[in-house]
Length: 319
Ligand code: GLV
Ligand code: MG
Image 1 (tube, rainbow, N blue to C red):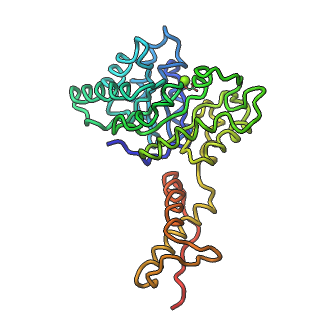
Image 2: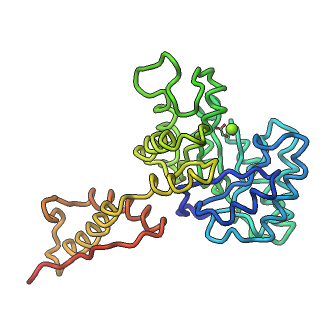
Image 3: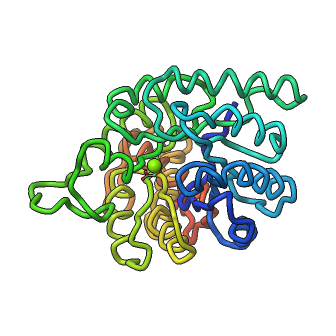
């Protein structure tokens, strides 16, 4: 079974065609690295990219990071060979396969079946390798609920804004910006929320895609801040400078994390016999109840997954 609580605040894209960048990724503090054989790799460079990726994964050095490989989508001629070569070559050193441009649940099932055969015939643990499903067109979005449920291997649902904008004929030139002439609401809100609902309904992580203007760090933070505010778990980073921004934006603030841990301890105490078996109590100026505990659990889980430590402890009231 895939691990769904891995921290994925920053997901670093690395073209598989570049051994230099595969090497450099090891030293960057990204939560996840995905090695690409798809759109960042030219068609004639794909066979070498597969080999570079297998070599990099087996050489190691990505400890502490989720290791994912993006294969080509099922409408191309490359997908099966991408999966077979990478998983046969480095399946034990790989956490997920990222499937781009997913349009139907069947496409996830096909990948699941292929992975299962490769795992069985290579003595790998069956079902350990997860699937990350990229939603990059209208058909994928309208099928996102089925896609999220298509296999227990699915760990994340990822928004692919560049392909998505092209697929729906959106006029924006810079990913994350409003299309010219559009000033009512937020062009991305519906898409992000649709993906988020599917992810939350089926216990998957929701990941925001790339921000292409890599020199515009403020723009990155603004766009990341929007999906983080909705509840997304992380975002792609295309450049080392974006890593720290993603890690910051998708972590709870220290105050919020401390407060969440305090609520969990306080609620635990007050609902116990020793604390009076109460269900709604005051914590400082705030009334907390079971719903507060649920909200606190979310912040606490994100903080713990991000390796945060609390700076405040709950003091039981004097008897
Ligand atoms: C990512 O793959 C995108 O298309 O935005
Ligand atoms: Mg794409």
